[in-house]
Image (cartoon, rainbow over all chains, first blue to last red; front, side, top):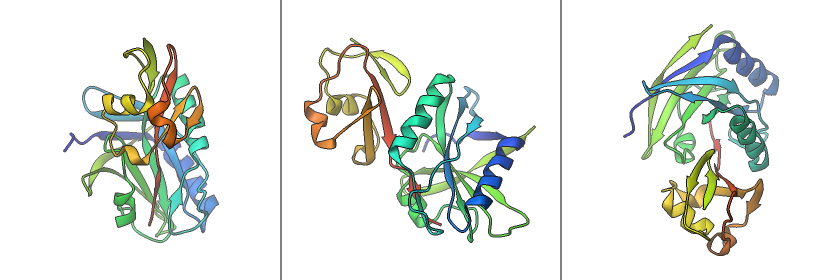
Length: 143
Length: 68
């Protein structure tokens, strides 16, 4: 298995995700993340993207490839790397579901999951998915 | 010839096809990857016959989805 990353996200970006995920309720919300993979194993999120869940349900999400392409273009234009994606779990914990693991096709990126199960205390975790196994990565919120 | 693949400029053999590029780049689970060339999506059936040209910009886009 690849070495686990130490993911960092700015508090303002976390707030951006939470606000959007609440706005999209009852549906799952989703998006992509861009930034830098540093040599010391730190994965620094510089930009979070708020995207369309084309499934429009509270049980799963899919992204529109054309919207993905537009995001990747923006990531490249800023000199960032594609670091992964995020999605919300409106009614379940912040852990990879069987479907999340089954559909995690790229082991080189991080999969962030925001749980809104406790509406007063949203929880964000980051996961590495490889070979059918999801492993929690360290996630630090920075100013 | 030089291509920009997933944001990186690299050298490849002349006329490399999309299918060959997927192999050369060791793309994981290629059956779940869409490919764009110069911001146009290539149909999967056309991967073996689509030859890339000098300066082309290629992106591999994984299907992104999940459950709850």
